[in-house]
Image 1: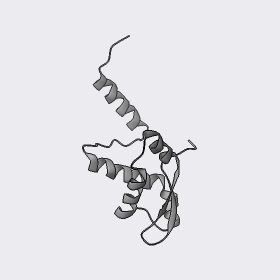
Image 2: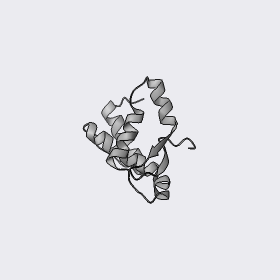
Image 3: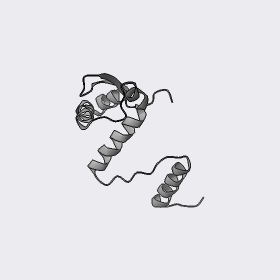
Length: 104
């Protein structure tokens, strides 16, 4: 069995995921991380947002999501990620956001 460096293993995994149409995202700092999380959350909840005529969350709405996810033990945080979050939008509408796809 050949020995492979961690860098080579990582590169191979990234290439395999890109072949499966996953997008590579470079995360250099916390700002990029939050920006990518917001984008992925909007993609995951595209149908729910479309029901209220929206494609994106406002900055203040996304801040509410971040506040909801902050704090607590790792077990409490994991539970929140499995829950559905009730968000009241800036214009007074209500949506239920999912963080994880529990079906697949």
